[in-house]
Length: 136
Image (tube, rainbow, N blue to C red):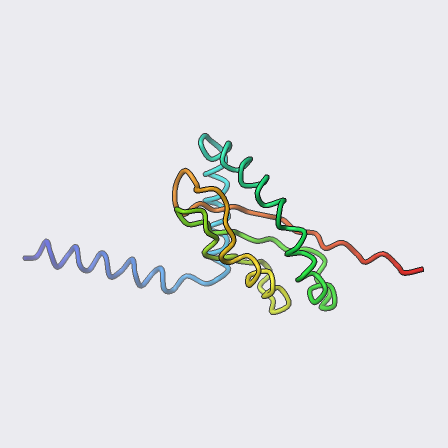
């Protein structure tokens, strides 16, 4: 009986710790997990596949979302893409956390990549917002 209570207490303590994790701490943890995933195979190879698919739709995402971000003075941001077992983007976490970047999350959640070798798979992306060319 005491072993069951100890196990229950251990599980409950991990749940409380996860609930106490701030957005920034979670973002950093996931970004570090990404680095571990792509350091070795099969993560290295999967990342190449993912980038090829990502490049097919990112231009449309950027076109839909960059205007507000630029208006708010954001020149660059980082994001962690959380990819489920079937390749669906379940979360798109931006850093810095800013309401002007919410469009990126809306555009990215639900997008599809190839199914990853492990789940969840984390992809870290760095985004530089291009300055608009002056109109002549």
